[in-house]
Length: 118
Length: 112
Image 1 (tube, each protein chain N blue to C red):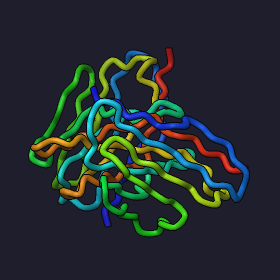
Image 2 (cartoon, rainbow over the protein chains, first blue to last red; image 1 turned 90 degrees about the vertical axis):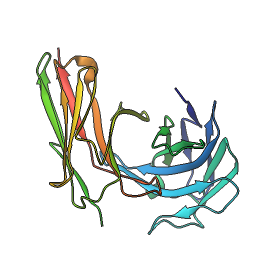
Image 3 (tube, one colour; image 1 turned 120 degrees about the horizontal axis):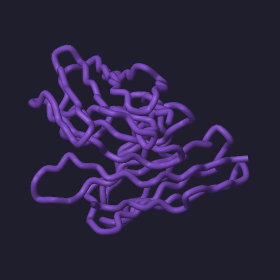
Image 4 (cartoon, each protein chain N blue to C red; image 1 turned 180 degrees about the vertical axis):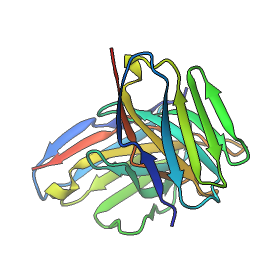
């Protein structure tokens, strides 16, 4: 099956610094990538939808200036948490939708990135 | 606004038992519904996807049903095994945007 990787798998940073998380589709081209956030014992909440070559679409309540998303190619999307604070500590998961001529419902999820802000 | 609820939040059963996980949603105009498995600290693995026109899907020991009119889906796990221990999430897709709305999950523990 299709593989989506995330890097890093975990990161610890000081408050005020910026952290970049990469999401790559390893063996397919992804038309669309999604970024989710998951707090402990809670479900995944969609943060933004990222389309290659265009600006990301953010969900209500998600600060686009704080969570910068870049989708420069069909295999790579990055999420940068700017000026991170302890409340940004969470598990960030990306998913990718395969680019196919026909519609497909399949999203492939990455393994997640655990962010801890001290 | 679509809301997805999963009951129970946690479940502990002895190995070999058959069990049912429940998922309910408030807006029945869904495009499809999907069940995922999440191991601790890991990403999601898709288990079953049911289109809005379907009533059930089966894969091995797993069977998922969908009653769109009542806003309910169940995931049936037969002959549970310790390796089934994980968090199970259901998610609905409302339209062609491909956005998924997740429930809060059921944490399953299958005791040897």
